[in-house]
Image (tube, rainbow, N blue to C red; front, top):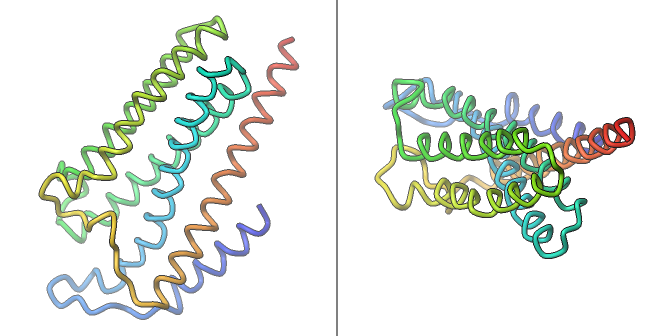
Length: 210
């Protein structure tokens, strides 16, 4: 976590104080507000990584019936849901100056919101089933099929006309690309540190309950 803190601090300093403004004659506020990308994208990438880890853990649970994989799936999905919330909020902060409204039902916004509700339903389902093995099995099935919402969100800007910049193939100046890569690594370390913490908390709850 300390490494992530230093990377994030150094990256944020570069984003806020070192990187130059960009030329945006048609929309002057974006000359500075483009810096939102260096926070929005890393948070979004980590959320996708978390849901992918939940998918893999769900498949492994159904294959092995090992409840450790259920714990990993639930923990990565929980932090992924949190990061998706931050993704939506930072996206709205970008959308207001870029598109004129915080929410415009753009395909990317809409698909990300659907994904958010899918994983919210994942935890609604878990809370509704008290028996652990049944809860794990049902959650794993939803975790696998629910991953379609992640793929749909990722490809939404290619499937539908969208105001959102393309998810894949983003082009930046070398200096900007280096800072963005650094921020992606830093946020990913924070993400999986939170997952590790969540797993420890859940194990502690099990010990106290037992």
